[in-house]
Image (cartoon, rainbow, N blue to C red; front, side):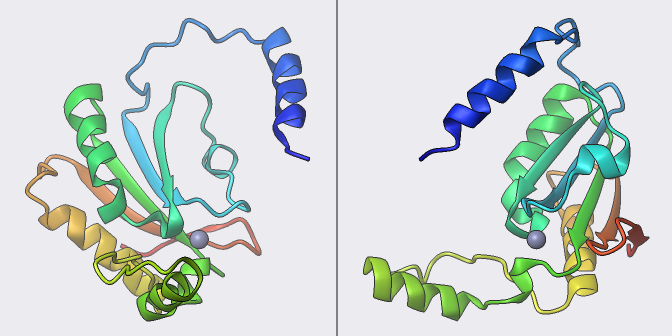
Length: 163
Ligand SMILES: [Zn+2]
């Protein structure tokens, strides 16, 4: 049984009291958050965001290399001036290596994934520093863009500044 029926029921209730149909496209707070897709993270709640405030780009690990296309669009076309990178404790990206996943793909799907970097990491703070450095060094990210990095603690809900 798919969850889509539950989604449609929830959406009906949401739309019934919806009153934010006039927001403008560019994020009001001119900020883009890059964070993990982990189901335990609710960036709108832990950052105090409401509809229209920010771009939130999510992927496995919150890796910026994987978000670069969206970051360029966010800054160049939609006026954001700040990037906040948020990785988190107990992240799934700490639990496997590229070799592990490539072997699994070979065994289960008979696919050679040698050319895909899944961007796993073994040190959480280092992954945040690496991603902040990646953006600061990227020719696609102007020096005028503010970049900072944090770790979100899934046990406490707190953000820890890293870079
Ligand atoms: Zn994660």
